[in-house]
Length: 362
Picture 1 (spheres, rainbow, N blue to C red):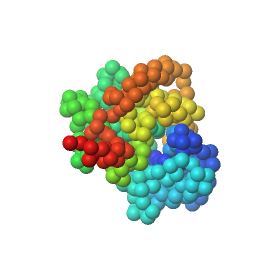
Picture 2: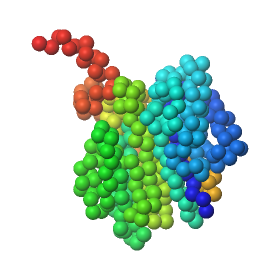
Picture 3: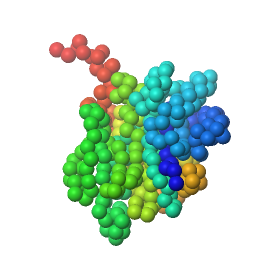
Picture 4: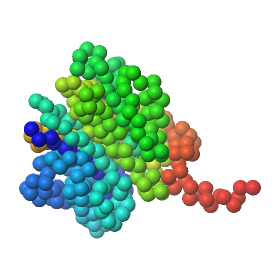
């Protein structure tokens, strides 16, 4: 069987209202623009969704990761949707479009990208995660729990096909370097790095055999632009079952709303709230940060689904705890630890305020 590639490519096209959600016309436009490539055979299948004000294009095709034809197609869709957003005067229209000219790959141009290529197994359950009001480091703790923590994933202990562990590829986003670390052998070194989730980000996870298990978007838009243009609102693809964590093991880490960077003006820590798609419209202080999970059975390249995996009352307590944490942390106002530390404020609007004070320091 030919290998299949799943590409999840997202961009902040424009917020409705403010940064809270995506206008239905934007989603409809994107779906209409993808029908042609599907009929032509450029892509096998697609699904369009949103998390907050981010447009998520979920595609299957046989052109492999980093395929120029796929990236150009998505870029053109983002441009057309941006034009529509500007007509409607949506907020921050085209926020993730950092250039006017496509350069062969959308990486480095603003949109977030997660892609993986694999041979379909007898059954191929895949979960696509999308987040709003946070950064790519938000995936570090959940991925560690899924693939290295036996208190979360019992398969690491009792499933012989998982017992040898996994290989984590970690990106240093400031040094633009990568390192591969194995679990369980290197977990202390791994935790040393990924605990600093704004500096070191898990880029991908493989079985020791080399088979892909998970991949994330690692694009930090503020670093690419050299200025504050919003948070990165990352995406992630995780394969499940049959030698990989079960669906329930992949979702379990989100039962605890851990703290992530982003929220209002990309400048605050907040709880990561797992929500169904209908509730992925953050408004309180532009948050708290949200995460959705779309489950698919990939069958001969077609996307059977999605199932809205967080539309489950068993996550009600996580949502309640996220609201309680949000209440507590919000009361700190402009003081740390609600506000990010100064080192992480470098690519917000903070430097512009500091520049005005420069001459007052004696």
